[in-house]
View 1 (cartoon, one colour):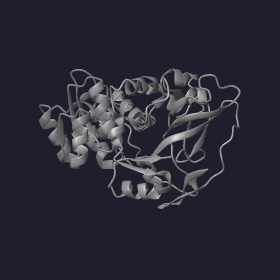
View 2 (tube, one colour; view 1 turned 30 degrees about the vertical axis):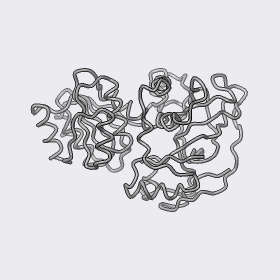
View 3 (spheres, one colour; view 1 turned 45 degrees about the vertical axis):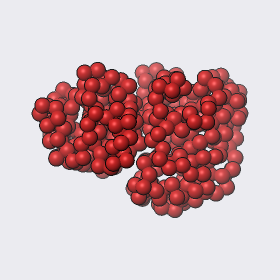
Length: 340
């Protein structure tokens, strides 16, 4: 089969890979219908994370081709959406709603890599969710978004306790930030402030429910949020970037007693303890337990109540994946969908 391999930072190739096979009785083989490139894939692409013939991709939808002898929840022929973290969905941590920290947690990259024609998914019963039927082609991008960016944005909004009567500020206008705007709207937030400097992303943020746009960054961004909230800061702040500036901007924009949900993958972010101490805020974040939200998100998409698929602004065939990486690295694309 064909699949994406990152040989070294910046060196992405589409090449022949071995077809996946059932290894454990809890495995499933999925023939992928679509996959995509994630903002977090840019960390190894830029050399922040190591890359050495790494199998790329962790977002995926497709049709189950084969299942192991112990798989009960999905069967051959089912169209499925999978989380970007493997989970059994039965351990104590999973039952508490944090499947991304399952005792069997494994990120769907490196040893699996879903930027490919097929993928072996371990713990299929706990990781995959079947759709109500075979989706219409126009639903596939939206269902693909649920595999990571929609689920991650939704978790961020839940972690920030977005809801009725609350003002939500979203730091980051990438795919996850835009999905957090959508989630905040669906959760009933009264006001949603999107922090963005890019006209195309601002338009999409407003489509998904943003009521205000703030272009300032850093301390200026914090002050602008406070000006919009009677000097108090937002009730709920979502950090969806992962840089030092964005994280501290998010901390500063959260009102005393407010909630910060952080999902931006961060490297070398240093949080001054004294600053966090005196902020007096609630914080929750990390890798999103997408599996917790998948059944509800799939139903919302199936019923055409939300359309997260609009977050994909560039579609390319799998063979042109290297072009997609360049487009996202150069910020010419927010998120790239790869067709198969």
